[in-house]
Image (cartoon, rainbow, N blue to C red; front, side, top):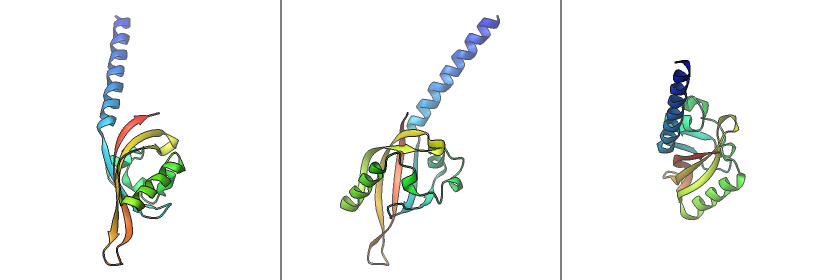
Length: 134
């Protein structure tokens, strides 16, 4: 009977792991950051914070956005597309969450301009979807 209990517990753990992966794959979040190269995170929703590995939005606000990209080139490419087109659609990026955990996201970003100051870029708003852990 002890072996049967262990086998059942293993099956349950495997199902929970599959469910966690499936759940993460469908989670989406959003954030806003200053529109400079190393722009500071201004706002993030709870789901976005959790996808990045943080307990709450307050743990992420104030972090420099380029610290969350695994490769500086990905952030530079995102910025160049934003400057050129004003938006980025469905761009896959390798991110570095809390404790240097690596994962891919699919992001959509756009520049938000300040209407009161000559339409200068005020911030970047991004929505993202968890894609795959490494």
